[in-house]
Image 1: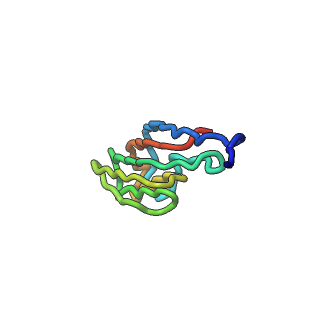
Image 2 (image 1 turned 180 degrees about the horizontal axis):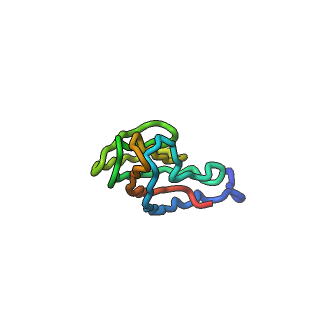
Image 3 (image 1 turned 45 degrees about the vertical axis):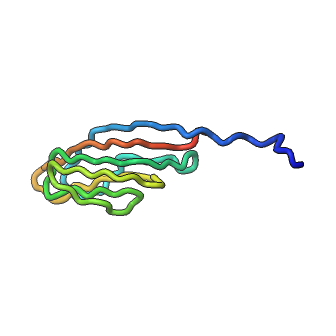
Length: 112
Protein backbone atom coordinates (compact mmCIF):
# COMPACT_ATOMS: atom_id res chain seq x y z
CA UNK A 1 0.00 0.00 0.00
CA UNK A 2 1.41 3.37 -1.01
CA UNK A 3 1.46 6.23 1.41
CA UNK A 4 1.20 9.87 0.53
CA UNK A 5 2.82 10.97 3.77
CA UNK A 6 4.42 14.12 2.35
CA UNK A 7 1.61 15.17 -0.03
CA UNK A 8 -0.03 18.52 0.38
CA UNK A 9 -3.80 18.82 0.24
CA UNK A 10 -5.35 20.68 -2.68
CA UNK A 11 -5.18 24.41 -2.24
CA UNK A 12 -8.56 26.01 -1.53
CA UNK A 13 -10.15 28.19 -4.20
CA UNK A 14 -10.48 31.83 -3.18
CA UNK A 15 -12.98 34.29 -4.68
CA UNK A 16 -12.39 38.04 -5.01
CA UNK A 17 -14.82 40.69 -6.16
CA UNK A 18 -13.21 43.50 -8.15
CA UNK A 19 -15.17 46.62 -9.09
CA UNK A 20 -13.60 49.80 -10.43
CA UNK A 21 -14.49 52.83 -12.50
CA UNK A 22 -12.46 53.75 -15.59
CA UNK A 23 -12.21 56.96 -17.60
CA UNK A 24 -10.06 57.58 -20.69
CA UNK A 25 -9.67 59.96 -23.60
CA UNK A 26 -11.29 58.75 -26.83
CA UNK A 27 -7.96 58.42 -28.62
CA UNK A 28 -8.05 54.72 -29.64
CA UNK A 29 -5.28 53.81 -27.20
CA UNK A 30 -5.48 50.32 -25.71
CA UNK A 31 -5.38 50.60 -21.89
CA UNK A 32 -5.05 47.68 -19.50
CA UNK A 33 -7.46 48.12 -16.59
CA UNK A 34 -6.84 44.76 -14.85
CA UNK A 35 -4.00 42.27 -15.01
CA UNK A 36 -3.24 39.06 -13.13
CA UNK A 37 0.17 38.16 -11.84
CA UNK A 38 0.33 35.04 -13.99
CA UNK A 39 3.45 33.75 -12.25
CA UNK A 40 1.58 33.55 -8.93
CA UNK A 41 -2.05 32.74 -9.71
CA UNK A 42 -4.03 31.27 -12.59
CA UNK A 43 -7.38 33.07 -12.20
CA UNK A 44 -10.71 32.36 -13.88
CA UNK A 45 -14.08 34.06 -13.51
CA UNK A 46 -16.64 36.51 -14.84
CA UNK A 47 -15.89 39.89 -16.43
CA UNK A 48 -18.61 42.55 -16.69
CA UNK A 49 -18.03 45.88 -18.44
CA UNK A 50 -20.57 48.73 -18.42
CA UNK A 51 -20.12 51.75 -20.69
CA UNK A 52 -21.63 54.92 -19.23
CA UNK A 53 -20.25 57.36 -21.82
CA UNK A 54 -18.60 56.62 -25.16
CA UNK A 55 -17.45 58.47 -28.24
CA UNK A 56 -17.53 56.16 -31.25
CA UNK A 57 -17.63 52.96 -29.21
CA UNK A 58 -15.56 51.09 -26.66
CA UNK A 59 -13.64 47.93 -27.48
CA UNK A 60 -13.28 45.43 -24.66
CA UNK A 61 -10.43 42.91 -24.79
CA UNK A 62 -9.90 39.95 -22.48
CA UNK A 63 -6.57 38.13 -22.73
CA UNK A 64 -5.72 40.48 -25.62
CA UNK A 65 -8.66 39.20 -27.69
CA UNK A 66 -11.47 41.53 -28.77
CA UNK A 67 -14.65 40.23 -27.14
CA UNK A 68 -17.09 43.15 -27.56
CA UNK A 69 -17.54 46.63 -29.00
CA UNK A 70 -20.01 48.58 -26.87
CA UNK A 71 -21.80 51.88 -27.18
CA UNK A 72 -23.05 54.22 -24.47
CA UNK A 73 -25.46 52.46 -22.09
CA UNK A 74 -24.47 48.95 -23.15
CA UNK A 75 -22.84 46.25 -21.03
CA UNK A 76 -21.16 42.90 -21.58
CA UNK A 77 -20.66 39.96 -19.24
CA UNK A 78 -18.94 36.63 -19.84
CA UNK A 79 -17.24 33.91 -17.81
CA UNK A 80 -13.72 32.87 -18.82
CA UNK A 81 -11.82 29.74 -17.79
CA UNK A 82 -8.56 31.74 -17.85
CA UNK A 83 -8.03 35.44 -17.09
CA UNK A 84 -4.76 37.24 -17.78
CA UNK A 85 -5.83 40.82 -18.48
CA UNK A 86 -8.69 43.14 -19.39
CA UNK A 87 -8.22 46.23 -21.53
CA UNK A 88 -10.38 49.05 -22.88
CA UNK A 89 -9.98 51.08 -26.09
CA UNK A 90 -12.14 54.20 -26.47
CA UNK A 91 -12.66 54.78 -30.19
CA UNK A 92 -12.82 58.07 -32.07
CA UNK A 93 -13.95 61.29 -30.50
CA UNK A 94 -12.59 64.78 -30.88
CA UNK A 95 -11.18 67.59 -28.81
CA UNK A 96 -10.58 65.76 -25.55
CA UNK A 97 -13.74 63.64 -25.58
CA UNK A 98 -13.92 61.14 -22.72
CA UNK A 99 -15.40 57.68 -22.37
CA UNK A 100 -16.06 56.12 -18.98
CA UNK A 101 -17.65 53.13 -17.36
CA UNK A 102 -17.22 50.38 -14.82
CA UNK A 103 -15.41 47.04 -14.66
CA UNK A 104 -16.74 44.40 -12.26
CA UNK A 105 -15.19 40.95 -11.94
CA UNK A 106 -15.67 37.83 -9.88
CA UNK A 107 -12.24 36.22 -9.88
CA UNK A 108 -11.49 32.71 -8.60
CA UNK A 109 -8.01 31.31 -8.02
CA UNK A 110 -6.23 28.76 -5.89
CA UNK A 111 -4.79 30.19 -2.68
CA UNK A 112 -0.99 30.23 -2.61
